[in-house]
Length: 301
Length: 301
Image 1: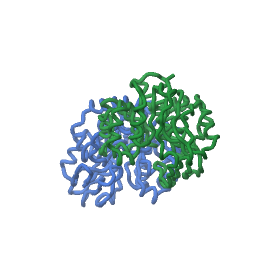
Image 2: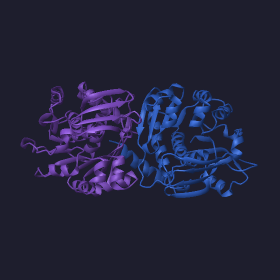
Image 3: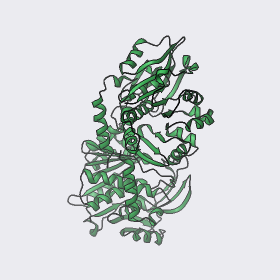
């Protein structure tokens, strides 16, 4: 089994959805990614939190077998995000962002993590993503995420990053913005033209699209749920399932990446069933397998 | 091969999309449905047009092998619809509707059409859909479409209709409105609870969902295109491909309805590539087979 390293945020989220609200709960891109990937592979986590970060949250992440030596505690407060999905379950409305210790995040990768074969650069400044990659030698499978803000303000850095990554994960609005193409097929081809081996365009409740080399490889709907509680973290959970599955299978070919996409969707479908990472507390590997098989059946005509 | 009868509108459309515009071109639910279904089965058409309806349009419909004996010409003008997709390709904005002769549409089904095994009631007043059904004896496979206006204004009639149909086709917004459920899984189950054997929820560029008996049967994305010219008629074309495929196969079981859903998607993907029914003028059966096989490959993980 290959090791995965994730570099991103660990946060305290306060969230309101049509199903209720949660206050100062465990969140952050690296949290969702690492817990999701932990069901498939060994995960190393690099992030930073403040002195106020509850011990129980650190213990919870560790309870999934995630290595948290790279989770540094700094003087100051933990990154906080306050969001609402009351108007639209598909789109978070940010009410408040307090970067706190995350504002100075400039991670030095611990030596023991440098043998990670898979690396996920969660959504941070692309210059910082490039800075992180410089700390690695040799070939790795690198995945990255980004967001509208960086596309608009750090386009050139993001394009340089694209040359160095294997997998890029963007949602459809981000892919359209980055490519300048309103058509999603053209947007996907544009992403591939920048360098990555695979481009994964996430469409929330409508599924995901996988582009490989110069072609469309897989179109998948999202797993349909009767209850969606909180969409926070779905994208990072998806990436965690995708890269986790690839790390576990050890091979990257058409068959494994197709299956990885479905595993990413399945993991995301669990996340949204509860607030924070609560759904994972009672999740068993056999639940994943069962939903994966059901999903596969539901998408095979 | 079974015969399909469609009862709906034949219209003259004036449409603007980001790709251009068309003026007084052939449109209408029964037009799109019948031409789409004609690639799979024998189609009988019941609709009404005015004295101004161009002969070349009638000839064009006939050129697909559609029986147009039921296309009645009445004193007055043909139904006209003016729409725009400039703001949103997924949602038509109606600029003008002139019902003209369609306002008095109260079709008497020609005797020779009464042996049609499959009947599609396109989007018209549900009381009229019920009136049409009364003209048939014995068991048939009946499909129907509807729209927000009837859901809001003729809910009870629409519910009565649901008891008498085999397949209901609605888009996601309509399904949510009719069911009062914002969750699409619950909306699908609600539709089935009213009586139909299958409920097909169309999600435009995001695909379709098939509910059967008391369960979800198939989730499918839409075929991804590089060029979408005009979405008009996609829903009726979808229904035409779906019912046409079932009529051709002659059997209705999990396997054939799954394949029917993909065939509906494939036919819809052709329609939107050009204005009016233009794409069908050069469409060959082998093009359908080729895209179906490609689509199947693209959706199989």
